[in-house]
Length: 57
Image 1 (spheres, rainbow, N blue to C red):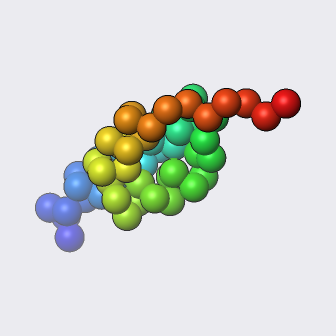
Image 2 (image 1 turned 30 degrees about the horizontal axis):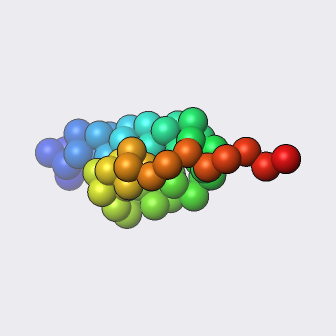
């Protein structure tokens, strides 16, 4: 278990970064945080290529 600890820390950090990226693009940070826990780097790729959501008026 000790050798897997850095992997879990890195994956968790990536999910928090993805949540911040999603919020910067007017998307739900909580939803993308959850998706990032399962998809990891693929979620990062999706956030980067998706366009910004226009703000609601």
